Image 1 (tube, rainbow, N blue to C red):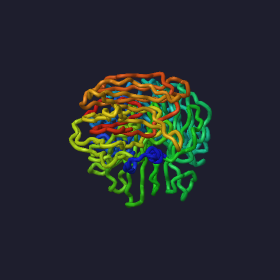
Image 2 (image 1 turned 60 degrees about the vertical axis):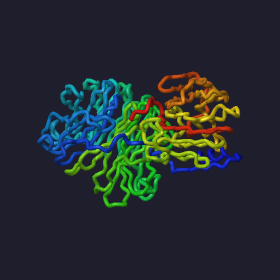
Image 3 (image 1 turned 90 degrees about the vertical axis):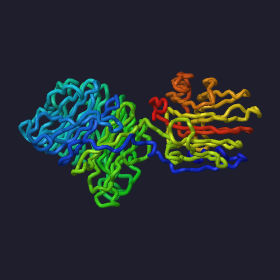
Image 4 (image 1 turned 180 degrees about the vertical axis):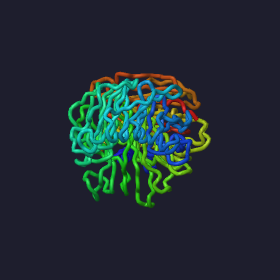
Amino acid sequence: MREKALYRSFVGTATLVLLVVLAPARARAQAPVGSEFLVNAYTTGAQGRMAVAGRPDGTFLIVWQSVAQDGDQSAIFGRLFDVTGTALTGEFQINATTTGNQRAPSAAVLGTGDFVVVWDSVGQDGSGSGVFGRRIVVGGPSSAEFRANTYTTGDQKDPHVAASDDGFVVVWDGAAQDGASDGIFGQCFTAAGTPVGSEFGVNSYTPGGQFAPLAAMNASGSFVVAWSDYPRGQTYAQLYASDCARVGGEFTAHPGFEPAVGMDASGRFAVAATVAGADGPPSGGTDNSTYGITVQRYDASGVADGPPQQVNSYTTGVQEFAHMAMDPDGQFVISWDTFDGTTLGASRISARTFQASGAPAHAEFQANTNTTIWGLERTSAVASNTQGQFVVAWQGTDGDGAGVKAQGFLGTDMIFADGFDSGAWDAWSGAVTGPGNLAVAPDCGLTPTPYCLQATVTDTSSLYALDNSPSDEAHYRARFYFSPADFDPGVSQGHLRTRIFIGFDDVTPTKTRRLFAIILKRDANGAYSVEGRVRQDDNSQTDTGFVDITDAPHHVEIDWKRSSGPDALDGAFQMWIDGTSIASFTNLDDSIGSVDFARLGALSVKGGATGTLLFDQFESRRKNPIGPYVP
């Protein structure tokens, strides 16, 4: 629809323009931060079965299971990183008891920024395996180990922890306690690690075969538990209030197995799982491969929000073992294993980001770099933070067998970055070049980067790069550098203004709606100024007024927010020039549109216009400030 809209905007014009439609490269917009990095420093034997937790300050704790490192079978270790992969601590041992196997760790972050790590330990509770945990204060003392399970007969294993500002819940797979082979159990705790109430059973259906439990909790303490139910062949879930009381009954949450779950600040949640494709049982797959990943979203009461949607776009072979992280605003990322069958045993870690609406934020992308090692690039874990950044970790190779690898990403908040430094505009969805006057050029002097976008105007042809990455964005923030250089919008013919950036909505298949624009003005004395303009539902326009600038480079940033409904008057628009706010509107009635595409360049060019405009470091996000370019 967007390409049709672009075509329509030039129907009936007399000037010949060249539209270069490039393959949309949204995966490029989901750019990694730094390079893939090795997590574990100790490389003897095997390290794997990892988990990740992200703090608001941008740091991430990665924990894993390491064989023989503590002198007796396997143990739990951890290490703190920032999103770039820079290690902030050495690796440290988490379990205090070292006898036997400590395995299957899970981690979460409390409101204080402290971490809670849980694992199962063989023989430590006197019968089979039990669930143990520890509060971790990085850079300070840690709490003593605590036992989560009260019932100790048989195995309590495969725990998962989720935390709020004031407490946490631990869930696990418990043997025989509900009269069957396996059931799901849990225990709530205060932030200090004091049990709240008693250990409780989660599943109501108890013939056995309930396994793979996961929990997701919001900051106020409400939570959801999801698990696989083998007898019924699906994933089930149960909601709980902040006081750990059950809300309603268990319900079918997903038609597949091996669930992943996330919850936002309002209590809305999503469940992703593996489903069989058309060529294998059970039914429910949509990608015609052996297995694929789908996600189902729910409101806070557990009512499904639309049908399940496909996560993976690559549909050859097997996609399985989903993991999910959701931020407080409801944006989420899902990672999974892909086995495409092209190389025996080869695998890769795939991922995709989604907006709170469920719309994909970016295309599916590959998280890991190495895909040539037989069977060892697999089994991911993922965590995000309130900045929208996230880290994907997986079992890779460390030079001595299995190790833990990871990669940081800018996150679900990121929409697009220009990619000019590659020397081309192939990160963009397309470009209108006019008669060859738009180019990615070197040495523009806007920022200390090697390339920028150069629009040289010689007639009335619009020259711009097109970004189709936005998808129904209700909140859109963009930043770019530009220089008016020697540009003249046609002052001698009374044409003083040219648009340099526009955000559009696809309202209908036959119409596009301009939501906001940045306008460059030059007067008869050669003085430049810029203005921001935003459209409201009644088609009136609110503008910032023109603000004087020099003919030197400047950076411009805008923050546009759609109002929540007609006449709600809570839409907003703010504009900065060189880091100084020039205007802020907070009572706009602009509910009709949402951002679907943007154009950057020389737009709505009038007769007599000549000269060159320069652009660099274009970036767009969903909410977080961008600010000046930092090399």
